[in-house]
Length: 222
Length: 357
Image 1: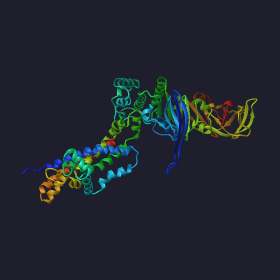
Image 2: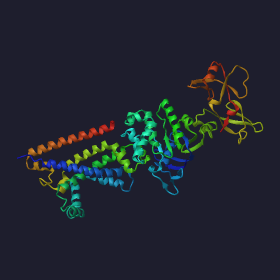
Image 3: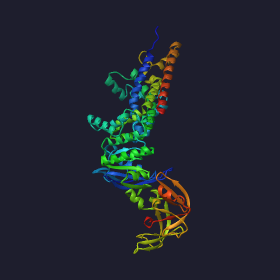
């Protein structure tokens, strides 16, 4: 029987999509936290950080309640896409996104705040809109840290287990990601599958951390 | 023309003393220097005009446009103010080439016009050869010129310069001064120059505002301030070394004379309007206004006092002589050549060089 690579591909796809979503959402939140003064700013920061400190099962439970078939959001999703969100691979993307976003927001906020304010002032002085200041000055000057943060977010999305299991379930060939497949394989005594997946995930993780560190070091010296 | 009245308070914190800025001035086309020690509020003044710092009270008017008015709550964003700003240490965008820095600044012009202007500025500021390089790949002088070109490319109505000569060597300084003189002639806009270098004020400025502890303590043409400082504080700031406590012992408006006693000497000066007999005053004399003569035993003439020479320091153009009693005299190198073998010295205080504060 051929080795079943499906869980690994699914994990990579889910983590990739989750990284993109959390990058878009996370950059926006990080921008607000770094540049704007508004009421409840620190509360927003705390809420965004929550998934980092809560047990993944708690996060998964919240998502299940918020997005389940009987919730308004779940209804809305079903009405648009014609099928429920929970227990699909898209639900795994949602879980991984929430799992990854705190890391991204934290690092991106620090990266945006570390850009020398003089450059942003100079840009405003030259007539650039806030939008242009962000895209042409702030973001390019912090891009290495932000790429590094996205890479780490990808790694974290790849590793999610609890939240994904709660909201997407464990359906082989559909929502069974690599980390869940490893658990199943160990439970079922299928050591070969477990070993291969563990090895591949470890190599990917090492590669990612190495790459992220190099990016950040170059930013410091360059 | 820029008219500014700016008041801003920073309350004292646990680790910082409080500070309050309260300045009011006007500047016409030409260079106006904001001169004063660091921490006096010079950069804060520029930042308030450029819109980076919001005053508590006051009003800032550029030509006919209100940039800020506390009463009517007008506060234009920095983007809307059209003030060219040359930042301390240039603040060129490090991830862009010099050309891209200029293109970024010329954004409000249409495409063709933009390229024409960028090329024109690159030529004018001698940057065409290095336009493809990033700021860290060019020299300090080139960075400096690029930051000025970037500030001017949008045809601002006002140019703000924050310590532009800092960190430049003497040669680049001279280059910068001639460049700024050309800009003054070509652009005909007010130029506000923040500096703590007195020579820079004399090189460039038509008007000078002396700023200290958030207040303008004197304003006027640099030479006039040097000749008649308004207070001991100003005299110290503009580097007048000879400041002594003295007493007025005689005043004669009819013959336009006065007598002053300081240390153990009696000097004759011109009449000091508004002073009374017996007033304790500060006597202020520029080092360049004092003269020296050999002391050969004869009775000193009027306003000549015998003094012991303590130290001689030679400068490129002149020689500074320091005498006992903290009296400094600056004479030309030529004059010093003639007198350097003097055994004893007389220092002469010309009557019209004596100022009282």
